[in-house]
Image 1 (cartoon, rainbow, N blue to C red):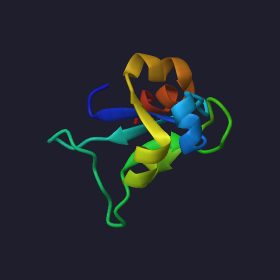
Image 2 (tube, rainbow, N blue to C red):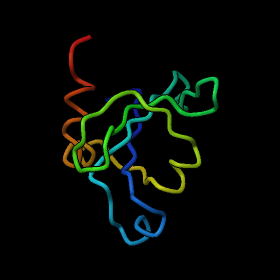
Image 3 (cartoon, one colour):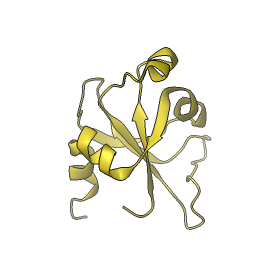
Length: 95
């Protein structure tokens, strides 16, 4: 999907190093320049999980850049689709 970058969520930084994940993905919204869009509070515009169980329902979220760096790993769209189908149901629904 154009205009989005996908990040796999990990419960802790140590879990990230071990490759363990929550079963959820954050979709960060990109601007026309290909960079993440920030809101007035300094967080990133994104869509992510509501709860901490795998394939959780999603809504608009505002993760900090630090959270994305320490607790998430960038992944490709096909892997994101496999891990978090609910995210793509939300992103592909008609407006």
